[in-house]
Length: 237
Image (cartoon, rainbow, N blue to C red; front, side):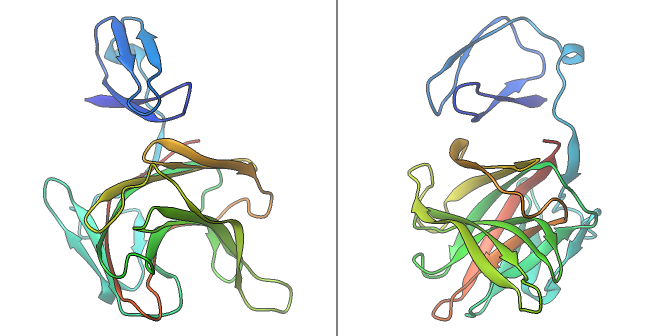
């Protein structure tokens, strides 16, 4: 069994066995050398898991499917949930937690399968309430990401507000059939985004405090989209 350590220098996840000999390990992202004391399983505690999506489970216990006619489960050694949407000008949700969350550490792997790499996006939304809005982080297969929120002004309609506009990040892998890990940590008013273990952005925002957590995909009016998600876990933050 393995547990995840966070590199104290860059925050990247480092997987280590629950029982390992005394020695050193090296962060693959920033090169930081960590000196580890001898530990055993009883001394090592993983962060608490709030939700884990088992894509081998047709019932997806603890989660609710959205747009089920556009979603399918691919079981196996690396189970995935696949989403396929025709061209449109909106973000589509495919899965959400059954309950509400405030602080959380949401992690998922994303693999784009089909679509125009300059036009399609996928990611997660957190602290989202229907009719009110919430935070979203999307990535693209052309190595860009965006952070924003959907908000509903009094008497108005829900609209998108960019918190961090589209930005290039070298930690992302380009192209179709490449797997990228997106990690979105919300702790109080602090929002942090990691891309393949590398910190991309950390900031404060006070707009949303609780809601459900979603998987999201976004085609465009000029491209359909097919995307696969795997290893979806929400930890305590």
